[in-house]
View 1 (cartoon, rainbow, N blue to C red):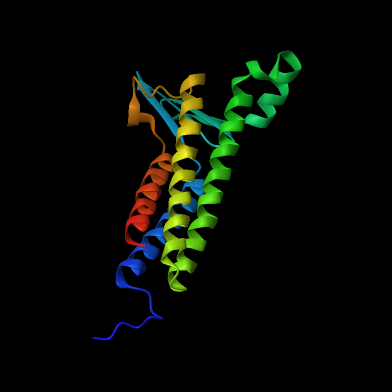
View 2: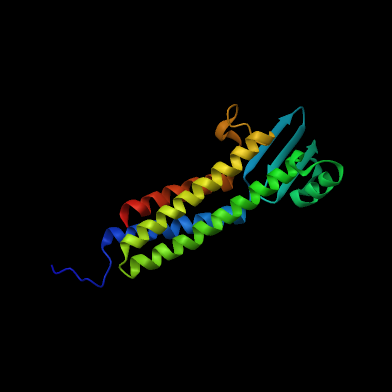
Length: 186
């Protein structure tokens, strides 16, 4: 068989598909917006606390009766700044970590789109570089958010590990793995 120079190789196409899947997963991670989830149930009392990139949702019920309260980091940070120094406010720190997480995921999504385009333009060297940048952006997004959450006490990676890792965190982990596959196959 004669190789068509205009068509990308099969492994490159698989790498591009892995990159596209990674981008879709990163979009889903932002959309789901559940980075940390705590749940507890004892003696008929159920409670949960969900950390989003933009705030928290706290829910509680006693024998099925209850509700949820949403809190935005921006509001809590503004209030904290009026009372104390912003560097002492966990809500300001979590707001910055959440914004960094979204920005780095956004960067990864854009770069993965360029990687897919590069594959179909038969520029696999560029695609591999773009996929590498996306992998680093997603990995950095996870490290930054969860390190800050661990430091502020929102997440205890040493004690609970993956138990309270939210859906968005897992989507990012799989997106990073798909990006690594894209690097290997582009």
